[in-house]
Every structure is written in structure tokens, then in C-alpha cells.
Length: 88
Image (tube, rainbow, N blue to C red; front, side, top):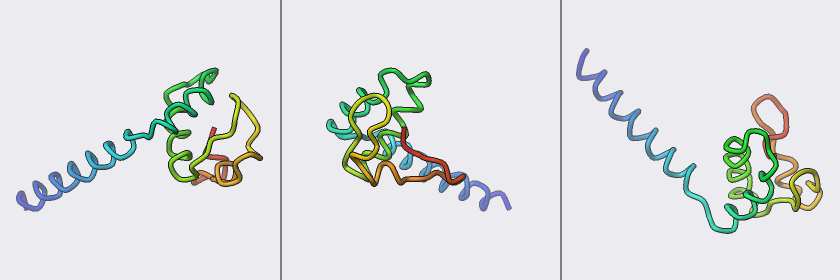
């Protein structure tokens, strides 16, 4: 039983580290656009995280710090698991 647990732990660690690396890797385009978008956010780190995810998938970020989502329909239409807008 112990070798199975150790193998599971190892696989979990590898998957987690690769996920963190991918989620933290950002392009200069997305990093700069999201910095502007999230500049007035109350929870800046969360805003930057989700903006970065949306930007990588959609290749665009609406201008300004709020609204203007009509400029990027992909960004506007992304939903979280609860059906609410994912992108800030």
C-alpha cells in the first residue's frame, strides 16, 4: 500500500508543479495589458491571474480598467464554473 501512496504523491507533485509553471508564464503582451486592466483592482493578484488566463486564450484584453468588453468577445464570453464572467 505504501508504494502506491508514494507513486500517487509523486505524480501529484509533478502535475502541480507543471500547472504552476504554465499558469505563471505570461507573454509580455498579456502582462502589460493586464497590468493596465488591473491597475485599480481591489484584489490585484487575483485580477492579474484571471486576466492573464483570459488573455492567453483570447489574445486580447479590453482597454481601460473596467468595461469595454465589447472590444474582445472571447474575453467577454468566458464563464467560470458557476456561470459568471471569468475575466476581469
